[in-house]
Each structure stands twice: as C-alpha cells, then as structure tokens.
Length: 161
Image 1 (tube, rainbow, N blue to C red):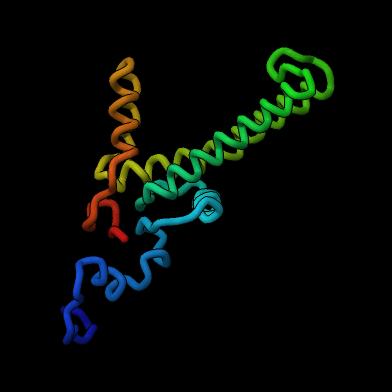
Image 2: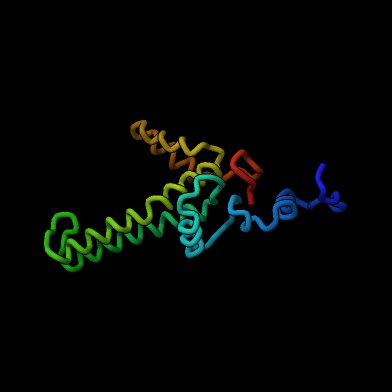
C-alpha cells in the first residue's frame, strides 16, 4: 500500500498517468522527451556517461546530426585553406588534427550513452549494439532499430514520455 491518496479522476489517456505519478517526464531524466537541436546537445552532454534510461528519436538524431556537422565543418575548414588534416605536419594541419581528435574525445561518451539510451527506448539492451559485427546486415539492423519509434509504454528501462 502506498501513502498517496487514490486518484479520484483517472487519466484520460495513457500518457497522462506518467505525468501524474512521476511528475513531468522531462524531470526524471529517464523518460524520453521530444527535444529541439540545442536541447539534444545539452541533454547529451549533461548526461554524458549515463547508460540507463531512455532517449527519444529526436534527442538521438539531433545529436548525431550535430556531431556530424561539427566533424564535417572541421574537415571543410581544413580543405578550404588547402590543408589535409590527416597528412600535414605544419602548424595549421596539426591544430586541425588536434581539434578533430579533441572533438572525438569530448563527444565519445555522450554519443555512446545516447546510443545505449536510444536502444533502451526501442526495448533493446545496450549490448545490442554489437550486432554491427555481423557484416553489412548488422549495421542495417542497428540502423533500423535506432530509427524506429520507441516503446509507448513503460519498459524495463524506464517510463515513456
């Protein structure tokens, strides 16, 4: 038995029960919510090494898009000034190479945590990532799993939003 008084008016739809029981879905940190581009980055870096809970499609894909834009921008900058970041030994090439390496270091754990939380939202364990070891078909299966809509109900990894 809980100490909470029984609800006299049941929620109208299944989404409201989580708001009434758990508070605002965005407050728990476990529930996936629809986010915009900047919020996706903030949430990913704020929960940089969190491997529990769930992440919505928008949170995962906006962060992935932003990550690719940063990497593409660094390489484009290098090409526009006529420098190859991977094979140049002069100062500018070294700085750009270090910038790319630093970005990889900074974004690796947030991206990994977000990937695991996105897999949780689709009902898979984080270990499901290793399906990519199956040549070609594994990457396709993972991509389909990441792109599909998350579970609408609570699953073993947390409540839905």
